[in-house]
Length: 348
Ligand code: NAP
Ligand code: ZN
Ligand code: ZN
Image (cartoon, rainbow, N blue to C red; front, side, top):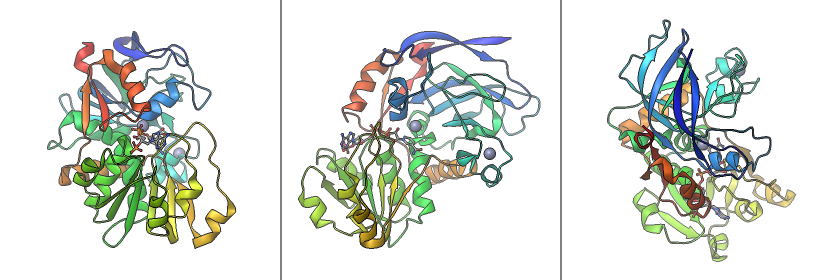
């Protein structure tokens, strides 16, 4: 037995997404059935649909920034009940037995976590994501959403939020730390808000100064255009922690020179082509080059609770599903302030 959901699916690489019916399984003992209210558009959805990472399987329904309302729960589920407002993020299954999973870092599961879309569950089911009217998923990967947060604006916390919060916490951003965020898009603007709420001094490195007022209002104290070569000279060896959220390939060597001695450059962007770094960029200043992928289940809930306490949500443009394809083009053109969120009521 299954139920039918209305979704927006890509049927081939670079083809526009189209309204498509998909089926959802009936909830098993540990499952939660959710009517989706809002779904954020992450740049990873676009990389996937356009097959920029290779090996995409079609049709694919993207979407891993999901806010919805519980409609039914399996017999073993105790944490959720029908009517609860909940979230689903980037992963929906992991082995639950490896060292990472036992440490609550399911995102680094040794067997590989299963994505909310485009992934293969142990049951053999191919996952389809949140650009849909409903989803059924294991309760371990379902989150409570603080009531104080606007649900549509909270959706991007489930990927963009945790992806920036996790490295900020891991590298201990706080009072006295100088943090730079490269790219003021979906991830970047939440990174600025979280870093400021943690007490760090935050600088935005954006292509131009066109979003400067917004960036300063989010908590940045400095804002530079990377189109201006002076930016790189003025900020040489300045930042303890640099988080690169850019979806396209940058010359990282320029940016590594802005990392303070013994500081860390964290790549969270996943551009299409390999990154290139010279030895000099790493040995000068003894800088560390690292990466970070979303966050584990406990940290994701901690991030949501922190967002609730500090009133942090995304700045969004709410759109009907019929505008998804236009929104994709605008995201690629860096023309978004600062996250598109799909109003799933438009599909019902
Ligand atoms: P986004 O909203 O499109 O933001 C990316 C920002 O990068 C843009 O707003 C723009 O900021 C800047 N940018 C874009 N093209 C550029 C170019 N050619 N040169 C310089 N800057 C450019 O994307 P997002 O949803 O935040 O995702 C960002 C990246 O993170 C994507 O690659 C995505 O796949 C990846 N991601 C990774 C994880 C993870 O777990 N590591 C999780 C989610 C997403 P300005 O206009 O301010 O310059
Ligand atoms: Zn994402
Ligand atoms: Zn595991």
